[in-house]
Length: 413
Image 1 (cartoon, one colour):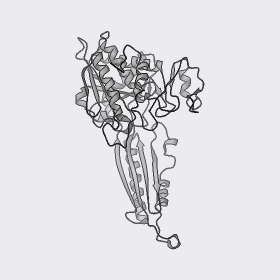
Image 2 (cartoon, one colour; image 1 turned 45 degrees about the vertical axis):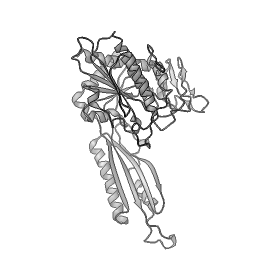
Image 3 (tube, one colour; image 1 turned 60 degrees about the horizontal axis):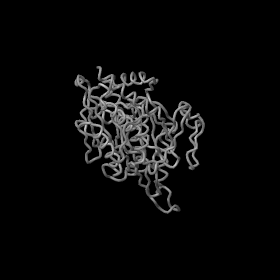
Image 4 (cartoon, helix red, strand yellow; image 1 turned 90 degrees about the horizontal axis):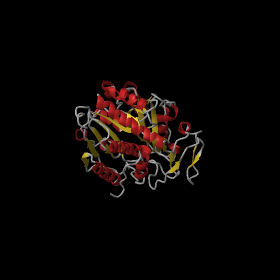
């Protein structure tokens, strides 16, 4: 079948998949948000069918599900699923991806095609950990697509190995989703159709990384109504909506922004602003790992709204808060074997595990609250969502090995 390749390494699949522009679009209002995601989904569907997967289903919302039956004698093992998303971020172009491959990377700066951009260890120190490996980069004109076509390719490589019949294993489930990059990846996910006991998203950073804590998240928007009169007679009458907007932002802690926080530190992030004397608006995303501090952040915003309306008159400011997702930690804690076994699987693959909180969200967070406990595993990729995105052949091979080890651990248990 056209577009299908077999008996290859994960990176070769990856190079095939990134030819397809699957950027999602948060303005389309459709599900999936872009039709091109179906192009990749249909290729994956055909590959799974040819490989011999069971119950392969691509639904009308572009969610692809498949089952790899248990080997004889392993039917009672826990059913583990692996999930990745097919879309790439709309932040940067995914059209016409032209990867560069550097064998035996020497640790120096890499010129990204003719773009004028350079992938430099001074800016990306993790490059020094990739010396001697086969490095895959962009040409500087597009993103690469490792987030998350690397995860897709690694899961497909695992599927081919399991379906070859050479490895004994319990039942393994697979799902590929659309629109994760615009926060809609779990919107139409059918946990019952998947049929897994537990799952892992394969959508993180370096090989061996594991995440089971993420931000609590919401959006916040202020709409400001001003009073616009002639500036010559404005005293005690004019309310300049743009200046009120500046006052609102100045009321927030100036150091609690993304550029000045790390680890478990939360933030208020001003994503857009516009205004005139007559009207203005501010849009924020609010994040914190602690549920208690997260709620306190929202109360701070509510207090600002109250104060501004008391100062300038009721109706001057309207605050709208919308929760986005919650920290999956509370849903994973009762199932810490998922974390422990992933750590063991990484060590078995010769990798030092790295367990860190996600400074963002993941489909796994929402799926965990939908009844499918789902930590996040690394893909081997770096610098996602832009022209500096890169990954290594060896890192992808290691991730496949980690996935196989997880399957083996749960098959034995």
